[in-house]
Image (tube, rainbow, N blue to C red):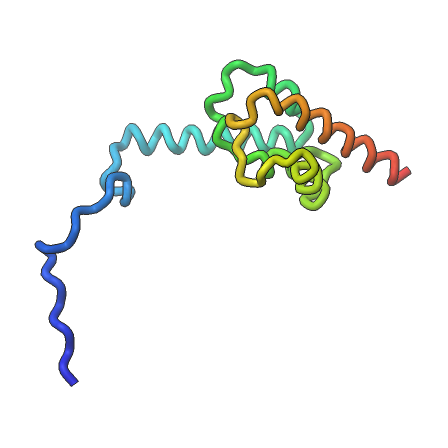
Amino acid sequence: MTRAPAPDPASAPPPRPGASASSSSPAAAALAEHLRAARAATVEAIRAGSLRLDALAEDEVTDEVDQVKIVVLAEAVPGLGKVRARQVLDALAIGHGTRWGELGDRRRDLIAALDAAVSGAAQSKQ
């Protein structure tokens, strides 16, 4: 058997923009790290109960949070599990891949539905 010739590196296509971390600038990497940390802190604050989604909806500066998927935020609400959070999203016809910044006016409907689900879950446990 003969081996196929090795590809010529000069004929390889150029790398895509943003394809590797080594091609990005240190400033972009620092900004990305800051945004990831801010998103993680927001989700943890919701999980801890120190931040509510209605307060997050009223906040004008939500650039850091706009990229968080709704399903992650809904699952972080205290008193809701993964299954109940996804059921609420399905009932409102909100895709699990939808991000907070994409909701717009539907945020209020989501917040009301999640609050109702939390209070319904709390009453069923009593």
